[in-house]
View 1: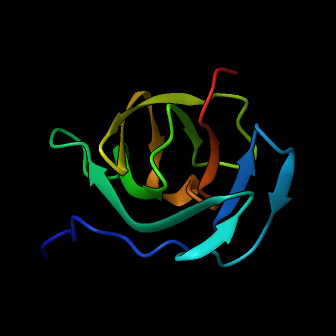
View 2: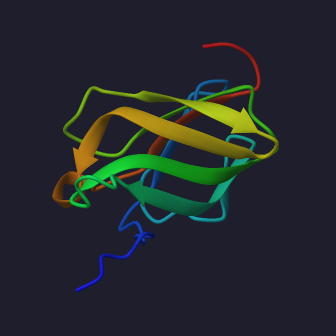
Length: 112
């Protein structure tokens, strides 16, 4: 059985550091605190496809700094690299697929 390389998120939350705005629930394509997060893609670890080792998503307008968290029970936030209006995030600590329950995003057009 082939394992899909893209997973549809169940819920997404965005926290915008510049305004302190927070939103929980389905969010893909919605605007929060001046940013729109959409087109979310997960990357599974090639050595262990039960782990998510990366995530990328569109952020509009372009954010200068972006961080992401995929498990609500985790205190680990991964730094993302802004590439145009997209954020690319490699997870130093991959998350078990079964634990992915949110996509929390911190985004700012300044510094944290």
